[in-house]
Image (cartoon, rainbow, N blue to C red):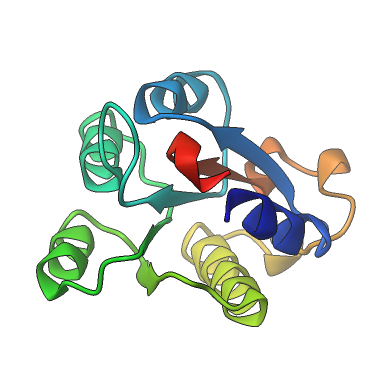
Length: 142
């Protein structure tokens, strides 16, 4: 699953950083700047909702998308209360993921007063570090 998501976004030109756990993701967030976090609901050591809560507690306000195999409404409601911009159910179609990522990066750029081109999926390594996405996943989703 994680490989498919990474390939879907990398073929669009996005720079992807993967993390194997919530703790590892928090460390990466402290050391790097990202434009979007795509969080798996189920991960080792802390789930995606707990990670999102910790991000918000630490003042990290980047857009976050939660992905889950669960269709339980309470998870989606909790994610939105924590500030998630979307809650997607697995399995994901590549075109759905591309559309959600593109729309949320453009919306965030507009809210931050930046041009959407900053997040355009081309030569992102040459652009700002905030042109990348963080993908923390549980190990079993490889």
